[in-house]
Image (cartoon, rainbow over all chains, first blue to last red; front, side, top):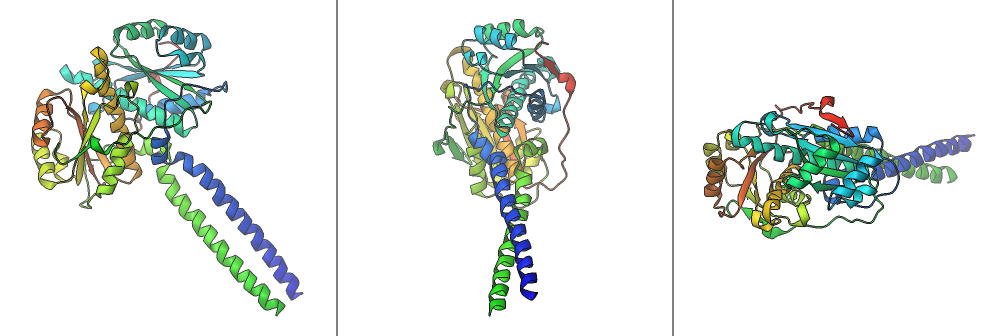
Length: 205
Length: 205
């Protein structure tokens, strides 16, 4: 009887332990991809995508990440055009010199600045920095959600600004800074190691 | 004898199990603060710091995160002046209108652009976007390392550019975009919820 009790005890402990090991392992798997430093260094420009659709919920998560960026004097001089329609993506792909990947993208986000909502005078130009910070948040959020994305520069190229404005009906007081092409990565692109210690100066140049 | 073997067996299993539970628990604790989406939304402008020094190793981690940002045509037209000396931080604090917190900061990073290393013509201006993306990486890396930081705009304000150039001996072909003030947070600042659904447009403005 004593031996049977012990065996039962051992059996229960073994089951609990197995669960613990499984749990630790699955946490390990889910933890690594979302660690901030890992995501910052794993982010890459992804231009090839699978045909898996990107959900509206995920796109909203990306835009929310964008709006968490800091802005000069907390002015938030930004707006986001989220594109999911095939024909709109195709028109952008056809008209943007470096935007051919939009033909296979499942979605895109045009990050736009509203200069008049920023600070007055020369400081109005902070909208570029504010919207760039928002863009980087979106790219990191995409990487953390296993999406692939690439930043297509629009501003300050006037022909690209005019074209994106016309396709997306963006008013003339709003400036598209970029178009972010988005999809699930086909797995071709790898992150680059761009670290260069010569770019760091200590206390003075 | 059989019972002693079983007891030994149970003892070993219990020890392994305790380790598993401890391990899973410490992973849980270390995982949550570094989740990318959590860090993006937890990042805030931190202007009040404790007197705990910031290590050179951590500052290098921040700059490495900066250099992982994307740049137009992969030009990487940037450089980073990392400031740890008290007298240099104090001089910046005294000369920058909105930089008083540098008096209590333990470190700072001046993110600089090198326009001539970017694309030609009007596209040279992409250096602002490139360096802003690098800055956002640094701010998120700081948050993920339990540091507090705030982005102090320098470019495009000419008087601030001249002042930072003179304090840090930055050459005239290099433009300080900002100074990031860094320290361990005193715990006063809270993140803002800046989400505004009116800022999102779907497929057209």
